[in-house]
Image 1: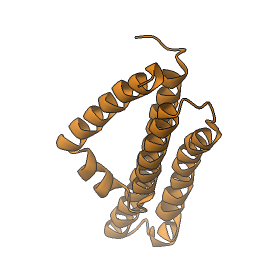
Image 2: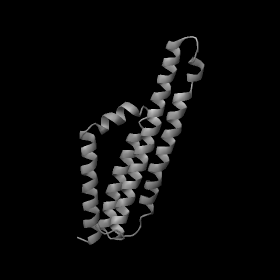
Image 3: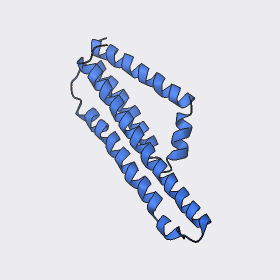
Length: 147
């Protein structure tokens, strides 16, 4: 077993522990409540696949990380796409519902904007965090990072 695989395994297990802890304290519920687009779950699936692929590359002692770098970029791009989709959801049709004379329609319009903003910012956070964790795995494999 090579040093790069051991370093990857330590980083991967640490990340799995952190993710499990966040889910234990309501992370999955937070994502389910705030991301109505489900793009965050797609990002998490991509992160999982890319993590196992990174481990496979570490096991084979190869330096062909272009696919993993693509996955890192995809996590960030999907997070930004979730931002655009979430903000569009919050704005679409909401401006027509606002009637300054009727407080109930204004409350409903503001509620729709808040729900869409939750999806927007949740996907951004999930995308950036997953991309950062994949990048950390690559740094651990390359040996440019020492604990």
